Length: 322
Image (cartoon, rainbow, N blue to C red):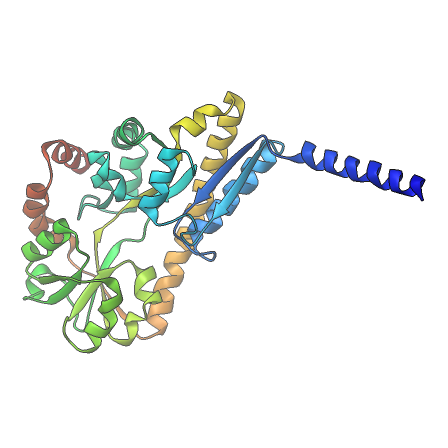
């Protein structure tokens, strides 16, 4: 009996010792707002797999989707305090780095290729450097977001056809000013109120990426998707600078390499998803309308320029010259 107990104790100690030897040397807590099915989370899973495999288990990546670590700003604050390590974030970064406002300026980018050229070139370098310097966050990768499109119950191909359209916009002064300049009657409103307001004809239109148009079932209360593409934007996957620099150099490189793999993986998912979204909305009866984007951009430009600071305006003009 005593022999059996001793044997069990030895085996137990061996198992515990084995588990201890398998424990990671470093942990990365990666929280974000997307749900488990979203392509951002799928990309985060890819990052976790790459990091853990290529660090030989020295780094464990813990994923917290669905705002489990809090809303976007909460997680950023947690990273700065050292209680979280990574997140996915966008133009909120302009709270620290004014140049990050370029991540969601109306008609700053002509198309996806133009946006990519800016983000992956000197302009992106400037934005990332300011984020790192002022927010103490290091952008590791970037994801393109679906462009915002205008929905309505009549086709709109030029700004002249807006004709005072009662349009819901988020409570962003630049968005309000831009749509006023274009000839609409923008009304800031919580997203949760939009469907009912469209249903009751309190408003006549709204603007959002295709993903939100689909998930909110706006096809039930809107007939047309007018392809204004008025805001093309991107988001960054960021890590705390202090956390990254606390890793040995070889493991820092593992993290950076995995982030590039994640970025490429998400880009493929994004392209496929944009096609799926259009097909889905067309199947539900929405008609897609080509618009004179140049006319929209020209009419919006004065309002956009007036809203930007000197520093932001200089960056905006540099983007236009690309």
